[in-house]
Length: 214
Length: 270
View 1 (tube, rainbow over the protein chains, first blue to last red):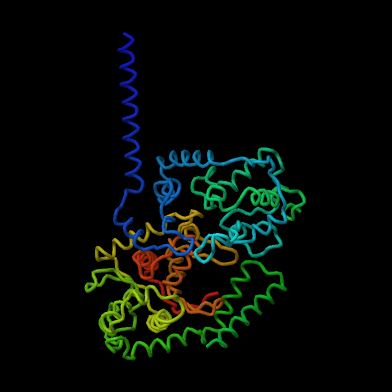
View 2 (cartoon, one colour):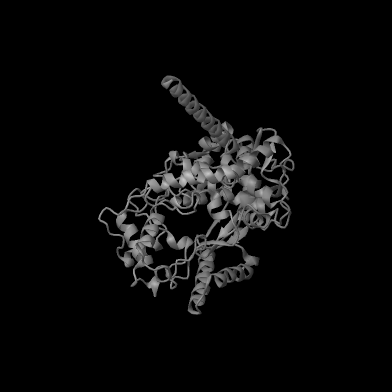
């Protein structure tokens, strides 16, 4: 009796796994079918130059998913987006010294710089946050982009609850934890910015003394 | 040539400074650049490139000491008028879809005996690439005012378009950027720079229809190959090989989306 129940459970378990596998195959085919011709084109069209290694065209699961906007906006895509967000959320570490807020003045400099990580840079070129490329931040800077939302008065309008502080920390560390295909780079995940730099950007947005909150 | 570009740059910087004094915002900067463009429309420095390009087209050169006058850019040997309007296009002799630069390399190799590698691997803006820039300026000037008219009827053209579309949305590198990150929706800017939405007809015309162009900020004439190269640099991608299929596929994607639009090359850009 016990054995047969176990067998039955195993059977259902296998059945379940089987369905999962089928669903996964369906996902892959609905998403980007592996296209050897396309991959061949990509592999033969780029080369390493300086620090921009050819392996930069190898995609991680997030990049692969977001390269197919048609699938990403489908129902199956919405489910997959949640998994992607979970994976990215899991990679975020809280500040090792427990400090979330650094120095807004350094934060402003980091937000201004769009340098680093190109083949005309070196490994020692400091990477900027490039924040003004896409966001309005301090209103005094009139040269700002609009791909991301305005961050003017960020702390002033949103307050400084622990919840908001952690959310903002997470968002700068890895924006894909909240929006799988956010246009914002994953600054901690790819080690573009270090912990101190992110603390300084936090201050720019949240410190009541920051010009952003005047 | 240098003095002209210096003067142009100075006058743009000056007008930008003047605007700064009047508390500018993004829109007025774009307007100002448009005004500036109008102001020197009759004196686009690309003309200097075009003139030297015409000379290079007609002058015998290379190991075979031949000119490019028999080069078939798609409308038949030697036909330059309107040729850039139908590129990229499938060519039977190479069995490839080619853009202007890759086609010119084919002509240089076949007619003049110049190995393509010597051009592909050369630096931008100097030596063989500088000559290429000039010849490109010459050819595209002869399509100014024409309608963009690329074909996707040949299976290889159709496939190139599809691969270009896919490459356009292909994310990679440490910033997770694709072309679409900046050029996939309308009304967007990086800093003050307007970004055409290349997935739409109007946006594609604004992009494809205005390059190659003279860039005031760098004082250089840039071909579409160089424009794409610098996009990939800022995208934090590895280096796109000059004339490689991904560059031609993306060109095909933009050109096809822009079909019917009027060519304004050589453009004038910030």
